[in-house]
Length: 539
Image 1: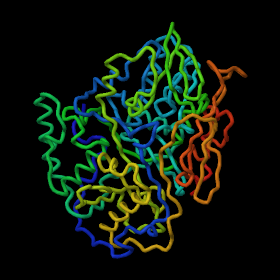
Image 2: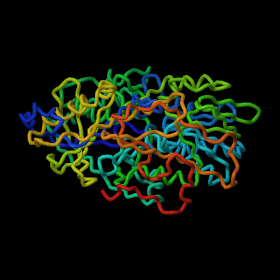
Image 3: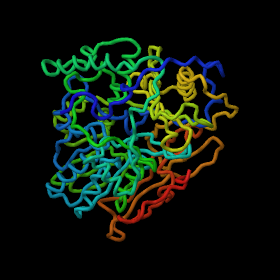
Image 4: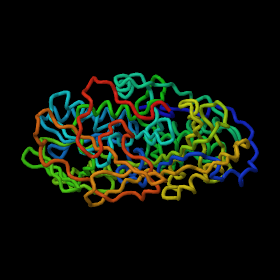
């Protein structure tokens, strides 16, 4: 187990720079004319995630992750980042857990397997099962694959609404998938920082972390990390928000003192995927049968068989099922299990925490922020929102900034109007960058992502609608098995529930052209075929 900030320590090595004056243009920076495009996430509102990724809450431990990932009831196996004690909260952990669960199902003698969820854990699991000759069907509640990996191209270049980095490329299965998929990996320099508003708080946080390490070594009952970490001035709070809130998607008040930083050391540096993380999901999905719009509602295990019922009335049966649903969904107890999972699994779901890390992309007509990879803002405001930004211009060649809010800052803006979030971010930027340009162009559109609501209905495909009213069908991805004409395990795909997000806040859903198959079944490219290209890859 590592202690400290091994996955991505950044910002603290930077030297503080004097705070630039507040811009007098456009009312202190909250003018929507300053931005040409906005892309926002709201993970707490997503009914298929209910948060960003798991964390060790007070009273939890790695044993809870192992209990959550343990098989049971009969024929039911479990995967997902929350089940991986070695690399929790990462795509790395999700992929590894999916492969582990596939191995467990194979060892149990299952020849047919249902995989619940087409996120990275589910796709990695299904790929491994199919390679071993098992019959596999993947049920996915969304209208797309990838889960908490979602690449959007509405602002031009590929932008990640979910996972962005591969953390530690040496020996990382996600890096291995990227190489197989032919995806470019670009190293990211966390130490290239333009920090404004005061010193970084590095020394104060380092002293606090030494106290934390000593308390961990001393043992005793678990308690909130905040009790030992303590508090300080604006520089210290900035360091905590950047290094702890932003890393673990939870505040020190929520994190376990004893296990907040539990996990294996990840080596080899971090990289971004300039062509889009969705290429990795698409690579894993090739040759698989994936039924979209199929939310799992019930799981029955009887006499060596498992039957899965979906919210649309469908039923699929197999020798086994692998559940890869996010911890936030499991916490809502919306799936009817018969028999019910063991108490230790239920307790693990209750003890582990589901964190939130939200993103906001702002596209400007031109970059005004220089060449640094990371922009830091030591905020005088008590809420501490928008403490750090990533310069996407350096990665994509487009004048885009990516801002982050985590834990309390993200929860405080969840459900807020898009204009409120945008204006909050612009005011924070103007506070530190007095040279923000005055623009004549009004924001083209605002997207709010998620939610993707789930209710009864009959419309099989989501609508992708922009502000001028044009629309197109989202993709439905499903591939028949090689047994021509055979229905896998049970009924054919049922229609997707029909309630949709109001069209004025939706811009694009699905894989954005990677598989443009409308609402029909179509075979994906065979394994080994070139990855499909996006219609906007050239932007």
